Image (tube, rainbow, N blue to C red; front, side, top):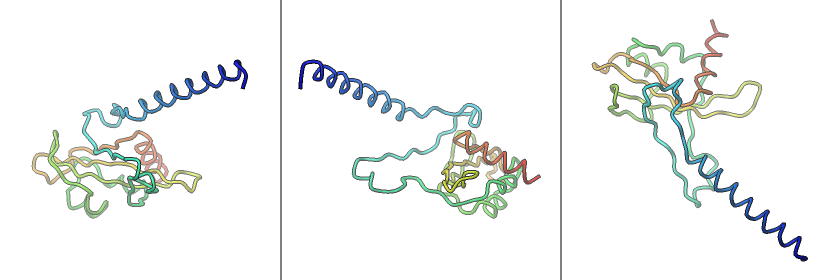
Length: 152
């Protein structure tokens, strides 16, 4: 290997390391979507260690139809939410009231691929009526909104 090839290889290795560190930093950042989650409610993250990479998916969800979420709106009873969405993955007290967390999986339009979406239902102080619903990702809220518009 001549000096020019060695110098080029060193540049390539340094550039690759820089790119990997930037991608790693971006991947660790998970900003709150101020459009769909203006109150900055928290969601649970998944952490993976190197041996876990053998698993096909670290977060999975129940396959669902986006149009059905039209039935879950402010004022809906907790019993109606459970009838429409099923048992929540997690129930906990949050900053704005009792929270039910769900993971759903939607088939992407014109695709055989799925998107896993985290959904939170927040109840009023009585714990009996929906105060608000929040999607963690705008892409999920958009899929549901489009399905609701075509179902109307």
